[in-house]
Image (tube, rainbow, N blue to C red):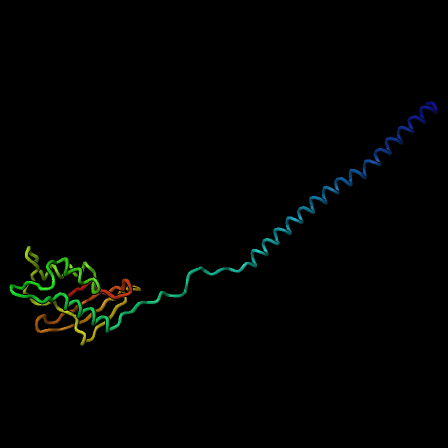
Length: 201
């Protein structure tokens, strides 16, 4: 082989080797850079995840937003019980003239409406319908005995049915009715106590 050819071949070989040598560090750097980028990203994501977990763990557990304060119970006094039951009976037994004609009222509806501050309309109607008759010329009371009733001089029990409802229970005795139990429900409406129902046993 001639010297010129050998020189050309040798020169070409060095060029190839130089290119290879130059490309290797660049390639290695590229891979290293990619790995480092990926690793850094992974570390950042892991750190963020851990911070979120720590923040979540540090958050206090809130108690249920349920008020522990109980509703103030509205109680009824003995004075009110005695007053309402007495008013009801006085209103029920109306003064009458000849032939038992009622003097103060001309109709059942008028008499029922007069119970407004004492009892519910439904309870008043129940008793008025039983003890009165209405005719074209006026209202008449039916001669009969009064119902077994509450005696304010004797003992009784009260049972709280709700925040504004109370049941008054009394065991009583009379010559006319013998032994009986009366249950009277009261309700607190519009800042006053009213009778809601009456049961006799």
